[in-house]
Structures are given as C-alpha cells and as structure tokens.
Length: 320
Image 1 (cartoon, rainbow, N blue to C red):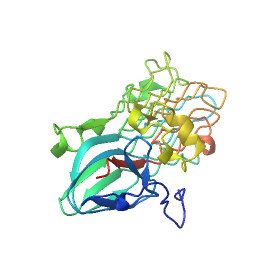
Image 2: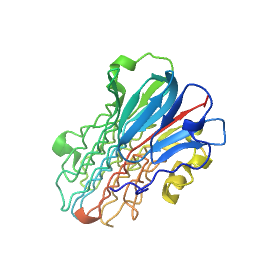
Image 3: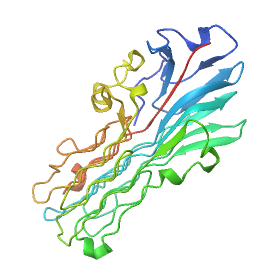
C-alpha cells in the first residue's frame, strides 16, 4: 500500500531539528511535530530513516506490525479472522546515530475460498551502529474451512470444522521476540492467541487474536480480540492530524491499537461479530484499519474477505 503522504515531509509545528541543545532528529511522514503535550512526534507509515545528531537520546517508541488477512470459505462454512500485528513498546530506548525503520504491510485476502490467506509483514527498528533490531511480528492469517489459523504476532482465528484440524489454536508469538531487550526498563510487547472452534460445526469460524486479548472461540464468540491501549498515543493528539479519519476513529481517545479480525458468521456472507477495538475488521467493512495493524475479517467469499491493516511506527521524545 502506498504511503499516505507523497512527495513531501510535514514540517509544521515545532521541529525536533530546531530544538535547543545538542540533540536533534529528523524522519518520518510526520516529521518532528509538536504534540501539544511537551513531546515531539515522528510517525512512519512507510519505510524510512530516523536520523539522530548530537548526544544519545532516550526515545519512546511504539512499533506495530501488519495485521493478518481474514480467511475465506464457501457459503456454508465459517472462516476465521486475521490476527493483529504484534506490538512493541519501549519507552526508554537509548539511541545514537540513525535508525532504519521498516513498516509491515497488512496480509492480503485470498482470491478464492478455502486457501491460505496472507500473513502480515514484520515491522522493525534497526540500529546499524548498535547493532540491534526491534521486531514486531506480522499477524497470522485466519483459517478457511477445515484450516487452522496461522501463528503470528497475534494468531489468526481457526475456520469451521474444527475436528479436521483438532481445533488447534494459533499462537501469538510476539511475547517471545526481542530477547536482548527483555527486562529493560520501559520495554514491553504484546500479542495473543487466536480463537478456535470448540465443536465440529463447519460454520463456526473464530476471531483473530488482538494485542490486548485472545480471539473469540466459536460458538461462544467470533469476535476479534481487543487491541492494547496506549493513552499516550491517542488519536486526538495534534501531531496526528494528517492521519486518516478511519485511523483516528479506530485508535480513539484512549489509544487502542492492533485489534483482531472477526470470524465469519455462516450463511450470510459476512461477519456479524465485532472486530477487536483498535482496528480489527468486521463485515461488511472487512479490512483491518490501515496503520493500526488490525486483522482482517473472515468472509465466505475469497474476493470479499478482509485484508490486514498496515503497521506503523511512532517515535516521541521531550525536546532538549
């Protein structure tokens, strides 16, 4: 998916490069904007470089991978929702020099039924001079008929006819990543398992896992797991004004990101369950919300199943 800002960098507001003191930074589609709360913000919705000059800085980083696509089945069966992209948060990341930022794309839905959907792409922050890498893992795809969800940052929901794959649950693997950072002050990461049917009804597709909650297991629930809240990155912050309205609605005033996609309700073509708060897709708007890492919704037609939402990287700091 093309970046939302083409051909220019936004430089309105107070620039980090103009901040007093030895530290300055540039980079991002939103480049060094005053957030109105004492922080300067840089937002990457596409790959780029975050360039630091001067003394090493402590950064507050939110990194989100692309969400997985929803599964697809024929009209008599249920498909699983895509898992959300994994989430990495480091509020005291010490850096010097330049960082390479990569943004994971959302997984793409299948063009036919009962085949594998696309997993979400990984998002990374790479320090060549460290060297070190922070990795947010892409969300797992949702299963089709007789197909389990796929593991990912958060796992995808399983498709109907759970007996055909032993009702296997797709794991959320984000919390096993980035071992060198585990235990550091300010470091956390988030991802959860997808849901899976608890019976053998072929119509019981389940919800994809979200960053804050496991996906719903049908028949009790087909809902996507809720995303994780980060109030310090809430949508009303003035620095986020250029981002799409759909992003602002999904993230909301409390800062939800990376919701899982809803599993499909059988026989009606779309999911009537809810996508997870923070960008999870649900029918008829099946796609995960762009730049939230939300999972796509499961559907009973390949061309209408939901794509995963692209990831994002937000960096903020107090200018000096």
